Amino acid sequence: MEMMSNSLRRAWVRLALFAAGGMVAMSAQAGVLTGTFSALLASPGGITSDGGATVNDTPLLVSDSNLAIGDGIHANDGPGGFVDTQIGAYMLAGEYITFGGADARIQLHVSAGSQDDRGTSDPMDDILMTGYLSSGADRARYVLSGLNIVGELITGFTVTGSGFDDPTNLADLIAFDASTPDTITIFLDTMKLTPSARGAFYAGGDLNISFQTCIQSSPGCGLPVVNPMPEPGSLALVAIALAGAPLWRRRQAARLTAP
Image (cartoon, rainbow, N blue to C red; front, side, top):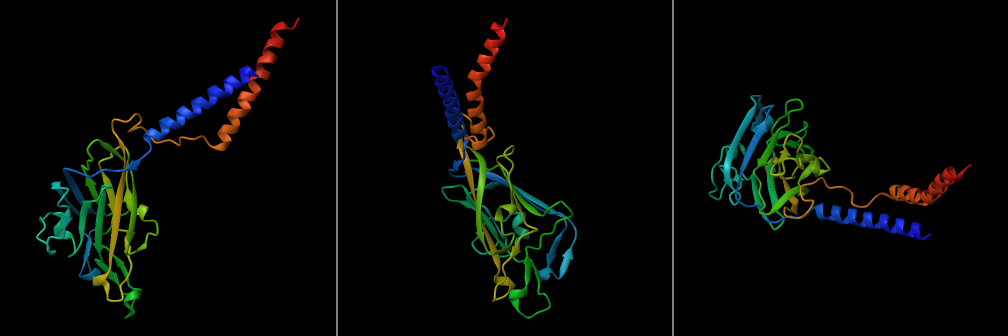
């Protein structure tokens, strides 16, 4: 029994250490984005104009680099005297990408660049999209890279928003790969905006993307995040194995002493 108790104690100590190690690598709310970043706007299927009446199917690929986090990106013809950018030339009035908040938040506003009125006079029947088009599996998107939080490593994100009819899960609009933690992709071709009773001009969608991070100097930061606590089934298997150990030893001893 004493041997069994010692075995159990050692097993639970190992589980506790495993849990503690996993907790170190778990994500926490992020600090503040600093420095500069780069941005790419890709619309491989072209873009629409005149509210979607005209489609220019020439693939669009524009980029900006060394943009100040504090400036973000705004429509070049929008109010406010913001810095003009290559991407801003293709934004509709009022559209923007900005950075702020204590949780390294990206704030994105998009407007309706494509309107399908469904053949009715009711604006609430309209299907409103951004006007950026995909080409097969190559999706229209913003790619923001060079994102940096001093002393922290980006490990994930959360997203909230408003003004979208589809997708219902806004996380489907975001792609993040932990192997390139300074980069995030925002898909534009599947954004379906909620119609406005005042018309398509007043419709718009807002995304708030908050980063999760770990402290780079912490043990486990940068390693894959694993479930720190074993599932109940795994614990049951451990208990069964520990309970069977004395029986196995008795059988081994019996074999050795048998005539």
